[in-house]
Image (cartoon, rainbow, N blue to C red):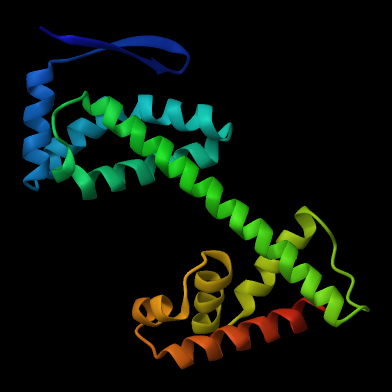
Length: 195
């Protein structure tokens, strides 16, 4: 028996018919590395995944980015699909997880921006850091000016919350080098933001 799903195209409803047997066969083929089968799964589900991401984020750019991340994650984890639920339900759970991870990362970033702003103004009372959105722009601009290794160490440690031993493995550097990069990044950020 066919499974009928409603998808929207430019505001109009469109009936998409996908047999569960056909879908499961596509999943098996895609899990075996068949990119054409995965492309068909993508085409059959992308509108619904985008709709979920748009409802969650309320932002078309973020929804597009999240949708791409969902399908990248789905491709990477296709072998873990157990055929116990509909593929679309599995994709929706990935979409929700990706959205929640993005929000956690944003929250950590904002907390770190506020901490850094406090440190800079405490260490240098003359520094006039704008609050809110402007300070985020200032910090993002300052981060872009850091040397790549220092920037990565700062992002991984102060924003993502990794420990130095984890960063040393990820970046293939010594723990002491990770600490030195972080120290350099913090110093350069303070100098850049105090300008």
